Structures are given as structure tokens and as C-alpha cells.
Image (cartoon, rainbow, N blue to C red; front, side):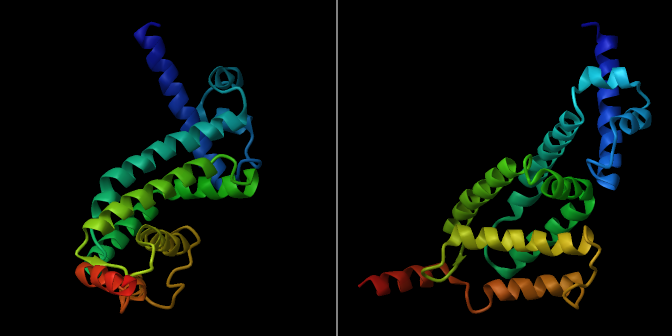
Length: 217
């Protein structure tokens, strides 16, 4: 394929995706027509169908594109902050999650559209993969952490729950526009959530291990 033709096709594909994302996240999937997408992208209907057979194919391409972007963000910006159970480490993670949520609202809008209009048809597989990967990674983090959950608490499950709780809080704040929905600032809310998960529950790793050995005697 000539380089110029390939460049033009890629440019058209990007324009179609951008137009679709803007329209679908504003009007919903079923509320957006292919004609509207083509018009906003500046291409003909025939041209659009050269790239995508159906409107759902466009939606799937958006899910895949933004999914790759978010996975890259998770790997580079969030997972390096999953260091320990100590409160300062958790606060740093929470602040980073808040930033990621606020800077990528279209991804979350697309996810909710999938839940409402497709019954989570397109996101469910990737969400399970993400949650499974988080549990595996969190297990390794907790294993090398200087502090640990008490005996009997599944560490990878508990840490993943904390991670997802931070996301839930910031999604309510940013995506739903429910500012201060816990009655306090985001900074204070994070402090309270960290205290909820660690206050009196997280103990030095050596203490947790010795406590476990003591119970098994």
C-alpha cells in the first residue's frame, strides 16, 4: 500500500474514532447515528463503512483503543505506587488514582454506556483481567511489605478492594459530579478511607507472621 494512501486511511480512521467518542459519550450509543459520526468526522458514509462494518464495530474499536491507553497508564503511573500498606503509600496511590480518573473521563463514560446499553458485553472480560492482575500484583506487594494485614485477611483481595474503593470514590466525585459526597474535601476523604482500611488493622509484617504461627500451635 502506498505510504500516502496508508497515511490518509489512518487519518480518516482517527477522525472517525474521535467523532464517535465525542458523540457517543454525549448522546449514548443508541442515541448516536452513523450519519452523525460521518458528518462530524468529515467523511462520507461510504468512506466510513470502508473502515467499520457497523456502528457497534466503531464502539468496539473505542473500547479497545481506550483500554490499551488505560492499561499503559496503570502500568506506568499506578502500579509503581502500589508499594506498601503504610498510610503514606496508600495516600500517594489514592492521589494518583484521582488524577487518572479526572483526566480520562471519556473512558469511564464509555464503560457506563457499555453497562447500560450493552449489559457490560464489551468491558466485562477486560475488567476481570484487570482485577485478576491487580490481585496477583498486590499479593507480591504485600509479601515484601514491612507492614501487613492481620492473620486471616486475604492480603491480595484486601489490597485490591482498597484500590477499587479509591476509584469508586473519585468516579462519584468526577464522573457523577457528586462533589464532596462524603461531606468533606477529597484530601480528607482519602485520609479517612486510609484510616478505615489501616487503623488498628495493619500491623508490622513480623508481628502478623508471629501471630499466625502462635495461632497454629
